[in-house]
Image (cartoon, rainbow, N blue to C red):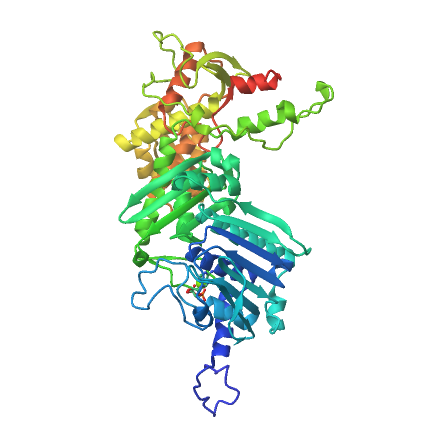
Length: 612
Ligand code: ADP
Ligand code: MG
């Protein structure tokens, strides 16, 4: 039986009452001002809505004793200050079209809420006004508006958050944790608004405080500005190793930057998503990103990216909980499809480009400026990733020509190797796995096993897309015994696997018989391959698309046909491999997101020897 929890005496029906404004504001404040960072977010969004070009944010003691946001926006007129502090008062909508909101704010709740839970002061000078005015509120009660000194914009100060509600104060975390949350909020907003300058100061020690974060307004078109801003916030390495995203479909646009697969992280921490300028954390995005990169990255690796989705406000519900960051799309499939296809398209266009990070990190360790002045034999390579910060485009080769096909066999009439190809002319193979090639302005080291694995994989995918993977019959079919559950799973997938060139049948008990394998692989160890495919099937997420599943299996299969490290190659073979890499999309990284080659420019080499 259901028991009413809220009624002390079930026989007395509580009467319905209208809450007074102060109580209503305190309740709203619970949602809007959860912690200092949420107050800062509201105040900075107000400044952005007011067309500010520079925004200064300051806090003390993790924001608990003081938060202040100053902007140079269009300000609030003296005779509207009081209204700005009353509930449901906003200049941003007139209430007639709730589906078409283009500003951050619209609820008219933030300022009154803050006035209910702290000591709030707003000082502002409206554009074109003769002077400034200010208003103070404490515990929901305001004092009369009075004249003040301010040359432009608005300063909102919130002191002693939750001083009147100690119970809520207790829920706040350490000053340090609250400050970290504030920094996170400001950085996210700064990513979305590259044309606005932001300064964040910690005033805890008194005086002018310590600048925690500072970015000037970026100039240039949106992409330039964004690229510059992301370099400041996510780092130069990210900027140098990311691809521009610019796509539009069905009235939804997606812009931003996403990292090459070779620049990945162990978690999704460096994934920043925005919908109509608002930071969001939404399953839809994470799923779409994983899908787009599934072909290049191991499931445990995650790209870094900042993506901005823009659409008609009517297509997305922003009227969700103010402190939460979920979104509801009217057509989630459209948004997801756009994200996946835009990312895949950018990755395909990256050609054989691989991350510069590996070479840069290694070189950074050896750069003369990082060397101790002491004798060279004391020099230790440093593990840290110091970037050379080259202009990435400068080293982007473009190729029109198609290269001869590399089949693992020697083609006698191979054209003489020419050094002016992007990946150069093969000069040597060392340690039976690394090809050293000379390029017009440097050298390239190729991991032949990783590179070949990727090429085989791309070929398998192409065959699959055309008319199925060509198979060849084994002279002697191979019998493989499997654990019972794997056996069943494999047989269930048999029709699907046949299209991938892997023909097998039940051999009774828990054994299967492998009859055909993909022709492109040549001779393979069928038993080892089958076990790998079994592992992959067991691992596969049932929610993945069929395409993703096929690719995952092909990727495993490709490993078995690759030139193993340890195989000595002749010059023609090595050159054929380089040419094919140039002609193959995605060949800059192996199927697990590691680079297949690294490049050293002559200038880098000269630096190693202290010649520049
Ligand atoms: P909302 O942003 O949802 O409208 P707020 O309570 O945050 O509600 O702000 C109320 C109103 O005060 C805004 O609609 C805007 O007109 C005005 N306002 C608040 N902050 C600023 C600011 N920094 N510059 C100019 N106007 C502001
Ligand atoms: Mg607001």
